[in-house]
Image 1 (cartoon, rainbow, N blue to C red):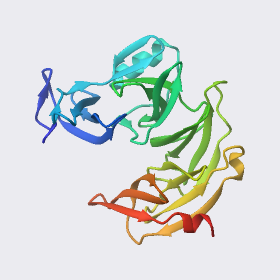
Image 2: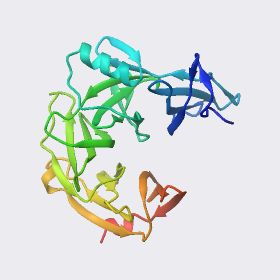
Image 3: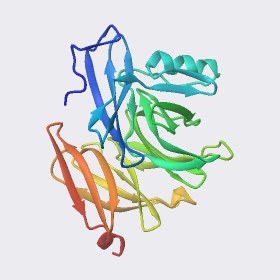
Length: 278
């Protein structure tokens, strides 16, 4: 089924490009499909697939909320909502992204799903209860060169956060405290220049990232109490280009999908336990 393509029109706007589709679900009844498309500017769109009836909803625009301001999830909508709340932000340009990996957290009886959002040099934490309206949470408040994709993972009252940086061979690892509203001092991780991802394995948080040459990936054991004591666990040289690793733990194994040289998508299984016990 074709959801949208360049040349389509939506609400009288011509679609000129389609980017970065992700799938999300809260239960076994519905799948949310979310992506970016360009008209006169970049927008986040969504539709909902009903598994039982095999029907799909109309394509609509996501919403972006900051405080009491709710706008279209577009570059102008993001900027307007942030401006209205007096929140500074780094320069946005080109694509608007939402990261696929989500972490649930119950707040006042409502389950919110946390993830990372980005546009150009602007990277931030966002949350949503319905995958339709995305609420801004925070953006790193220390000097940084964040650029494009950012990874998040919630543990308790902390949102662990990693972002690559522009023109720099180091990404930064930090966390945001949801109770105090404070960011932890960043810990730099060398040679991290592609999309990254967190995963939780046997009560331990790990970060996976791809290096500048993107010919493999590294896995870091995150010390959640003292980020400066985080340490590399393994480095894999794939002898081929690894873009955008996405991970999920199932049982004792780590499953990872990644893009090869922007030409292929691969799925691999890692018997992760044997590396943890080494």
